[in-house]
Structures are given as structure tokens and as C-alpha cells.
Length: 349
Ligand SMILES: [Zn+2]
Ligand SMILES: [Zn+2]
Image (cartoon, rainbow, N blue to C red; front, side):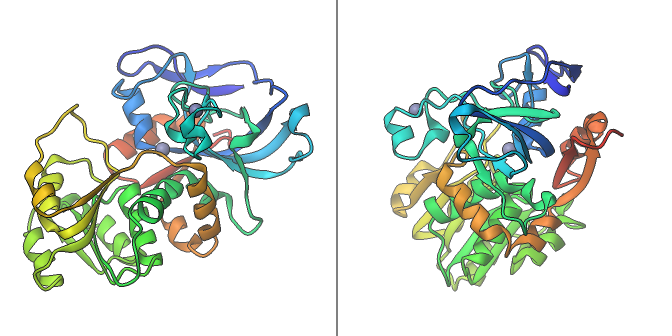
């Protein structure tokens, strides 16, 4: 089968290769992949800025159809089932974290698509415990963005506990920022301020508005802190959701949060350490929530919400390309021209 492979460490070293189809173990199932989304993480793996174990098939945002079921899990799954699945391959299932429902941060995890063969391939074999059945009414296009939708469910529902009537600041307008906007709106936030740069004015700001943003702020032209004070009668926002990973946004965000407010961190920063106005966190008695990846509980939340949010989620899929055009997709994502690009593993060219 054809697969997109990171074949050696170093910048680039990514290409399509022919490899044998995986054979599912007794507790696994073989999935014929329909779509796999290109994620910011894939760009970092390409650039060797995110740890990977080459040679490895890339891709972790997948949906598809069960093609073969291992003997040990045959009772629970059938050939033809439509599924999406988690990326927490390698999680041990026995440690304190796994038993607490947090396999996404298990020390033994070898994440799909970077350290374990992923889903930019015609077939994927995964432990059946990672799969979730896809409701009939969910289209493949919407199913293809379940993984990032689950991450934002974890961040806003489980960690940040965003509630009705709150004022939320979301910094960043890529997939995480826009999906956070969908959740904030769904959870009943009263004011949703989305901040970005001049690059966002033409496409992403209008998109953010259509997803529920009540105010968009171009930080290159407007003073974010003034707008926040204006919207909140001088208090600051209840919760700040940081999705940009940009040092400037992180500096200004802390000033925008009210005393006793919450800070929810999603965006990874490039350098290993950045300067932070640490004392501000203490003076304001802020609650800081670091977030990473998507525990199984957040997949349930995402799948429960997907049908109602389908039209918004579909708007985030900018383009669908065949595997042969992966480089075009990576380039467009890198230049910020697309929000989410799905690779169609069934389409030949
Ligand atoms: Zn991803
Ligand atoms: Zn574990």
C-alpha cells in the first residue's frame, strides 16, 4: 500500500513509499482510511521540530471503515463499521494515568503518526480500544476533524469549564482557535473575543464571526487590552484560551484576564522557554490550565456535539486533496492559506 512516510530524521525526509499492509493483532482492527487531516504537528514533524521515530507513517487525524477485526475484539466490532480513533497508541493501560482515563499523557505512549505508524496510508491497524463508532448522520468530512474537535472539548469543557454568560478571549485563528470558538459559543459564552493579525482579516476573521465570535481584534492595528476592558466594563475576561503559541499574544493575554480568572493553554510555543510576567499570575490569583492532546472522555464529548455543530465544522475544511498532492497541502497549511486540509486516501489523483 502507499503511505506518506517520514523516512529519516532531519528536515524534510518525507515522501510516499510502498509498504506492506499492516496485519492486525488479536486485539486490533484494520481500518481502510477515508480521510486523514493535515495537522500543524505534521508540519513540525516534517521540519524535525517535533519528536518522531522514523521510518514512520505520518498522520493522526483519521476516519475510515473497519476492514478486518482481530479475534479478541470480534464481538464488539464488525467489518463495515464507520469509525474515528484516538492516537494514544502505546499507552500502557496499567499506570495511574491510564487508569484515571488519561492515556493521552501516559509515559509509554508512542503517538500515532510520529512514533507509531499512522493514517496517511490506505490502511491502518490500531488497538480496538482506541476506536469510536461514528454516528450515521456524521459525514466523512466532519468525521475527519474529530481529533482537533476533541482536543478543544478537553480544553474548554473539561479543563477550562467554560460556562454560560462568560466572557472569553481566544488568541489565535488556526484550527484550535476556531474550534475553541465553536465550543465557547456552544457552551453559552456571552462575549467571545478572537484575536489575530492582519493575515486573518480577509478569511479567518469572517470565519470566526460565523462560528460565534462576537468581536474580532487585529492586534497589529488595535489595542487588545483596551478592547477587552471596554467589553468587560474594566474587569478583564473570565477565561483566556491561548491557541496561538505566539510570544506577543502570551504577553498581552495575561493582562486581559480578570482577577481570579482562568488561563487555558493550548498553543505550543516554538522555543523551549519564553519570558512570562510570572507575578501577574500570583497578583491576580489566576488558575492556569495546561492542556495537551485528547483523553477518551473528550472524544465522547466531541462525538456527542458533532451532529449539532456539523455545519460549522464543515466550514473549517478548506480543501480535500489526494495523497499524491500532500506537498501542496503541507505548503498551503504552512502559508496559512487553509484552516484544515484533508487527504483523501481513496482518491487516486
Ligand atoms: Zn493533530
Ligand atoms: Zn499508562
